[in-house]
Amino acid sequence: MSPRPRTVQDDVILDAALKVLGKIGTDRMTLADVGAEVGLSAATLVQRFGSKRELMLALFRHQLTDIHKRFESAIQTHDSPLDALFAAAVDRAGVLDGNVTLAHRLAFYLSQIEDPEFQALAAENSRRAIEGFKALLERAVEAGELSDGYMDTTQLAETIYSMHMGSLLTWSIANRGSLRVKSRRDLDMLIRPFRRGPRKASADSIDRAADRNTGTIADAR
Image (cartoon, rainbow, N blue to C red; front, side, top):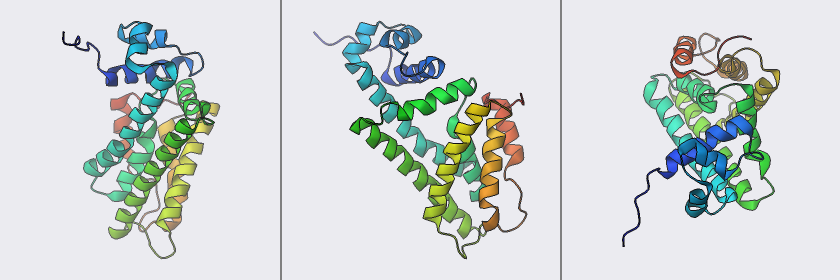
């Protein structure tokens, strides 16, 4: 007898897990919570993934695939490499319901850091993001938007990643203003010394349009 077809694909379950995680956090989340979000029983999720830990690892791997997509989308939708850099950084958090959702997502990356498999995935997440920022910085240098006089693109990419993680954390704590605006302003301040031409935040109008279309938290509090 052939196995019964899956009525809910793994990607749908993992997206649901991310949604539930954002609402209640990793520690409180159960397989039953995730199952309820997609109409499956906890037993079915155990059969599919094995355990909550394995589901969390699958979610982490699922999130890794989005990094490359985010940078490729930024490159394809912006003629300016510098605008693409801003878009890739600002869009990192995706659609959020608020600062608590973001805090829970950030905590997810650190919640099991003592576990070698989780630590390896967290390190890979950082590596891919830094590589994406480095590639866009080099494109911006080639396009004449950034000066290459004394800039180490690898070091600056690492600094952009570190700064942006800090931007996410401080915004989730302060719970004030727009995450998108804060991320853009922080990045602009960081790369101003390397810019050629007008030293102002890039892609303001593009970001405002994206705020309206994606539902990212953008209203001042």
